[in-house]
Length: 206
Image (cartoon, rainbow, N blue to C red):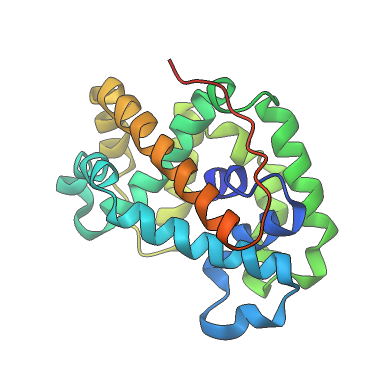
């Protein structure tokens, strides 16, 4: 799961959203430096990543990209799942995608000076480019993959990824919806056992 899904799975709690957003950039016990609810978000982020990587349905989805990306196929799977969440947003939330993204931007900027340095660097560009909202389009997926290829060890096989996405779109959509039902339940349980109150608002996926 990528940034949009992590924010969505944060129980509409601003501090949990902050922690879940920065989770990749807070290693080891450094999470203890943050307020309690931000800590919960960081630990939720780790739970989501572990759960996702081990889930057989996500592994099936990532397999669609394995020939071109090999060990990075899961990274591409994360991006594709954010796209599928954005593309079906009205099935998962009563709040519009634009409204949710705007709210998320405001929350993150409100806590800007407590964010890890790497997040401070990329957050303004992420906001300006409307990346979270643009995940819903193929163009947004393409832009994200090209940015990641230019700034990380992800191979530049964007054209291949888009071809696979188009070829297997119906299958990937069905797999995502099955996975997401499990992921929501698992996040609910994690937050419940962490003392958080659940408030996910999502409608039935047809």
